[in-house]
Length: 455
Image 1 (cartoon, rainbow, N blue to C red):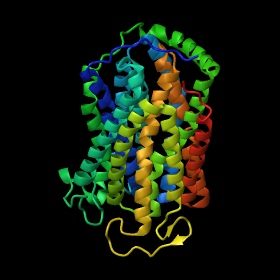
Image 2: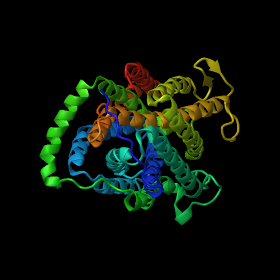
Image 3: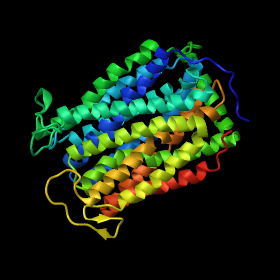
Image 4: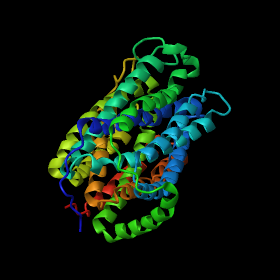
């Protein structure tokens, strides 16, 4: 049986905006570091070749996912006992910032660049993912249950908008074409960032750290936290015992169990998609950081629109319907993307080779851009509706623990999809073959989700 809530008033506007700004604050870590700037830079300029870079990035993503899977439920259970969530967010802000700062010391040709890049990426990923667990758990205390979809969708939309602005700043003012030495806006990089050492690409890490430190402040200043209930020392044992009971409860709640398994599978695919999207475009189409950046800006715009509409659809049709539609779009667009290379569309349709230097001027590039836009529009609603469905299914008073299980289900096997991409890429020396692994995860997640009863 699903528990129902007693109607509660919404928090005041400042409190809600403070919570929403967490998504704005963290998005550059995902947009700049993981997907569109630093990840492609690592694969194209730090690793020995793009295929090896994609494989190494997959192994690092898998390692971070395994650590999150182990620790997130434990931390969530302890946090439910201690009560307050903001101290946990503050604690995990430190590794987020430190990991991003480390990425500066990864100049091409440096003997330690590969190791520093991978370690910094893993540390930053752990920080942002753990902090997100506790931020998500604040949702039921901010708005009534019937408005959770709009709250979650608005958070993702604001996050995408933050990612868009940060990407414009990074590409327009910092990251430059190594051949021309100019940024996307045709300017010399600010602060004397040297194009020869790809300083603008490396600066995406420190810039993401600074962005987070500034824009997470409204959460701490304006969003109320639940009262502290017990000291940390006495809560560890009780929290672990409670976690054991939560596992048993999740197994007994068939809709929750099926949803967590479905979330586990399709989130694996989503993690891999974000980790390899820019790397794939760089290797298969030969796009530079400028072209990848424009592609990222376009995806961020479609993602923002998708998240806003998805939140509205969530409140009207329910989160399960939104997740299902998003997965169908991801599957069909994913098939389209792997069917494209520099000379081919839909696997068998040959196209004329690209001539000249105009951006996105060949048919494969146009097809890739269009399919990517639809994919970006689906990714936001998928994630926003997933956390809404978790709140619908979780019993009151145990939300943080269940968000810990939610993080567990999204991470416990999240090393499998990146690892699969890495292994298949290494075995076939084909980026397209490696990326195809992701589609199997989306398909399996959709099949499992169909069996979830959302009342």
